[in-house]
Amino acid sequence: MDNLLISQMWLLDRGWEAGMAALAWLLIPLVAAIGAGLWGGWASRNRKSIEDGTELAGYSRFREAMERSHSGG
Image 1 (spheres, rainbow, N blue to C red):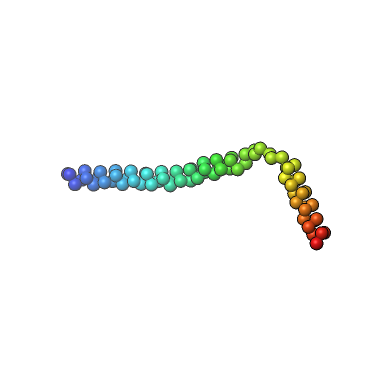
Image 2: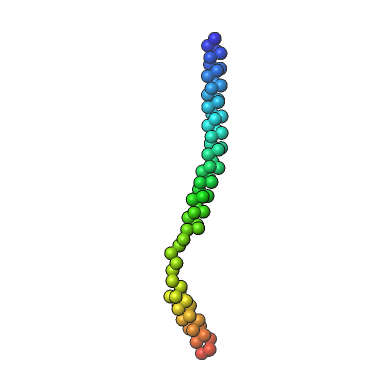
């Protein structure tokens, strides 16, 4: 009789492991989907626009300097 009870306890223990394994395999895609959603929201956020005027003025000065160095050669 003791043998029968021990074998039943083993089945309960194995059922627990199988349930936890299934839960883990279901949680992995769930966590990945949540992470992808968070990353997508972060990647598509509205960034504060930096005024391009200073960068364009710097590029204009750079082009003028390059033209002067080539034409003065």
